[in-house]
Length: 204
Image 1 (cartoon, helix red, strand yellow):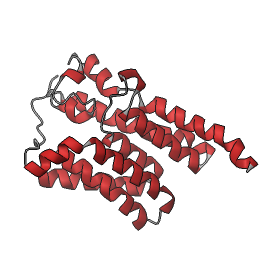
Image 2 (cartoon, rainbow, N blue to C red):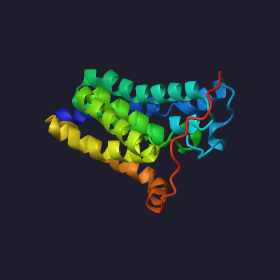
Image 3 (cartoon, rainbow, N blue to C red):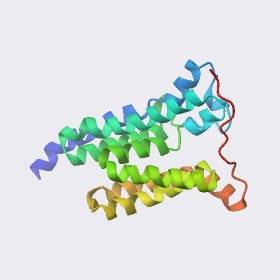
Image 4 (spheres, rainbow, N blue to C red):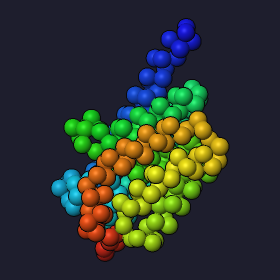
């Protein structure tokens, strides 16, 4: 019991560090740096890479995708020195930080890129299969939300395939949150009204 009591503050700190990393609103910052204005007033108002892409600026969208994924991966890898529990809590913190960033009054993104970054850092073969699932669904449907939902749903399955049972619960929690954040998208998918991926015209 004493060990748990001693570990608790460090685990809480791991979660907090992860949250602060995840709460960095890279989409908003990149859009502003590229002269695209306030991302929250564009398209869906989401702060993720898909909404950045709606501006037609592919470079900004790519940068947002990479940075949002990187903050999840960095949180996991940085806190791995404190053990697997701290690493997973840091990943959870980063994910929640992206979804509910304190700097934006807790109105953040849907967490897909950050989720992929977390999966890659926890177990790169699983992360690779999550990416492959996203890509295959995107090619087949050309619908970003369908790709995200499929990738999230199958992440726990890939972990089981690779015998990584320790991370399955975390993946299930993150996948459930992604599905909840995509509630409006799911309704549009069921009505056949979800917009398809549009690459627009690149800026500079």
